[in-house]
Image: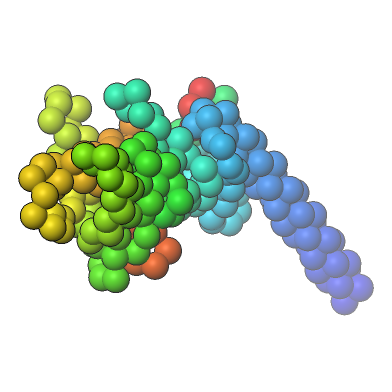
Length: 238
């Protein structure tokens, strides 16, 4: 009886030690991977990583992770000499194969969301306009002030924000903002002058982890929301 009790106590102690070591190891791996993602993406904000599955050590030894969740803040996407900041990116990577150095890996599939706040979308326009919520999904309000024929005009227009295919060989996507209509007040040329400020395209998928693509878009009071998915997605790197 005493021997059995001793065996149980030893088993409990060893189990607790294993759990403690496993949780320390997963915390260390999460921090290391977050640092690697931060460096690779050149973030203006932060990176948080959560590795799912227990025990972690057996997954690590096999170089296979069930699921890795990644939260990024301040992702700068640059294309055609223009920068667009993704305010937040939340993505889940499934069936991740780690590289030999454990500094990154590739996921068989991934999905997630990204948010562009109206402040960041205003900066992305690079035309001096202000963007806010347009009152309905897929709509934004654009306020533009311009000098026209010696007059200073301010126009508020409701614009549609959509996701369209990029006109190149990279199969990427472009966020497009187009005013639904522009009040002209009978002034010739006013519509084209306003649209030069309010209408713009911005490509942003080049700032995402390789293999992660934009698939859908909508808007609400918080900003413009993007849906992400992909296969063979690179998570950090060697």
